[in-house]
Image (cartoon, rainbow, N blue to C red):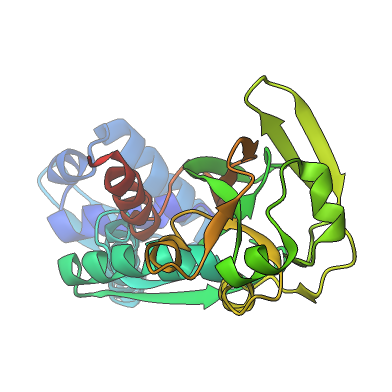
Amino acid sequence: MTKWDDFEAFCHVAEQSGFTKAAKVAGVSKSSLSAAISRLEETLNVRLLERSTRAVRLTEAGRFLYSSIDPLFDRLRDARDETMSYSKLVSGTLRIAAPYEYSAHHLAGIACHIMHQHPQLNIQIDMRYAQIGLFDENYDLVFSMLDGDLPSSSIIARRVLSLDQALYASPDLIDAIGRPVQPGDLARMPVIASSKDAEWVFLGRDGGRETVTLPVPRLRSSNADVRLQAAMSGLGVTKITATYCEAAVKAGKLVQVLPSFTCAPLMVFALFPSRQLMPSKVRVFLDEVSHMYARP
């Protein structure tokens, strides 16, 4: 295997015209430099330096080698320095995938703020509904929303937010079919569910837990806005985050159903490949997410 360190040692000696100065520049001993040159000459089967007690000069072969490889080492150092700058400079394109509900109401403002702070950063946010493969589609960050804990995985997950959920329906629907008193009453009511909902779990004020198997939904959609619009039009009862339907409740277009029972919160997780050598664009975005939710 080629020992490229020996080639770099040769460039230091050639540039400094001696071992003493070259050793100081390279931060190694004179003896190690001398050994490197000897190994290189043996490997190439040619003398590269003429040594005397006063000076070191390049042979013809040494001049050829130095002129050929020294620019390459300069480019290599430049590439190293530029690559290392990626850990400090917030630049490039940050690719994010997240559900619509979280993207529209939370990520948009964060992304705009960060792009104002870092003009060299571009952000791509894909709104996705199905489970997203972090590595399969080369995302830097994936946000996932679950009613419970995240399944075990080799991917690093950070819980960033807990969103309260509740059941809502239009006042006209409640007037027409009556207000449910117990979760079991939902069996006689039309429901609007997300694509993955098969049952809804409730906690009563006494701490009791009740699970309701959903009747066939009038509408299924992973898009929270579709469910919101359907609920406001009177098509059924839906489970949705309180922040997402806050405006509709204030406008009197929706009312909360079964307020004495608590739905499991919707947990938002940030998924990313590794904590080690995290790109600055990912670190800055996650820090801003944390700071936003920490503000009063």
